[in-house]
Structures are given as C-alpha cells and as structure tokens.
Image (cartoon, rainbow, N blue to C red; front, side, top):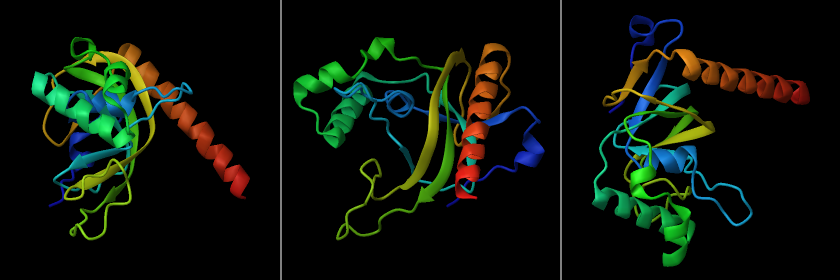
Length: 187
C-alpha cells in the first residue's frame, strides 16, 4: 500500500510535508546517541507498514504521546542495534521527561524507500531497517527549533513561520550549496 499526498492541491508555496514520529524515535533520527568520538549515531531509516512516493524534504514532528514502556522498549532496541551495554544505554539517551513532544523537532530529506524483506533467509542489509516494513531512507537530517503543533497520521502539511521558517530556509540554503559543490566536482 502506498500513501502519497497530492501536494499540488494541499500545499502552499511555503508549506512542507511533515511526518509524526513517536519519541524516542524522533530523537534517534534528529540527534541520535553520541559516540565516544563525539559523533552522533543517528537512525537513518524510518520504518512504516506503508510505502510512499514522496521524495525530498519533510519536517519531523515528535508525537505528543509516549508511554514509559514505549520509551524503555525503544531504548532497548536502539541500544541493541548500536551494540551498547546496559550502562551505556543509560548514558546514551536523554531522560524520558526531557524529550520534546508535540511539535516540530527536525527536518530531513527522504531519498528512497527500502521494500520489506519478505524472507528471513536473507537478513536486511541496513541495521535500522525492520525486515517486514518499508524503510524510508533519510539524508541531510538536522534539528530545528522546537515548534509546538498537533500532528497527524501519514504525511501532512505544515506551514512554518517565524524562527522555524528561518531555520528551514537556512537548511535549504546549505543543501543548495552542497548540491552545487557536488555538481561542480562531477562535471
């Protein structure tokens, strides 16, 4: 099943698609646990039971809801994927109460969709990909100033204003400069 939105009917020239993601998964995508070398081990795939034809930038919205069990289950799963020990897991994640919820927290580019791995005989090649789901491949992820707003299911439209709009424009300008550099190197 593929979900796509007819952006030409719903979008304004300055709106962007947004996707609501529960915490701490949104944090794992936007920030990710810090490694000893100071780099962050961000989650570069968002798993869904549905596919999409959308490609390009979208806003990351942290859902308002998050149970204690959801938090600890996610910390356990993410820690296992990263090979963290029990003590490391406690140090690598922000406390549940400090995670921003119910608003825009970041921006990313959706660059592709990995189909479900229909068989367990061949393991999925990407560590963040859940084998029976579609894996949305993310690139150029960046945090944005927290902006409270209601989320929705699937991709939905958000009209950024003020500080958030300026931060998004800065991100777009950086991406444009990077794209220009890549084109000049390949030509």
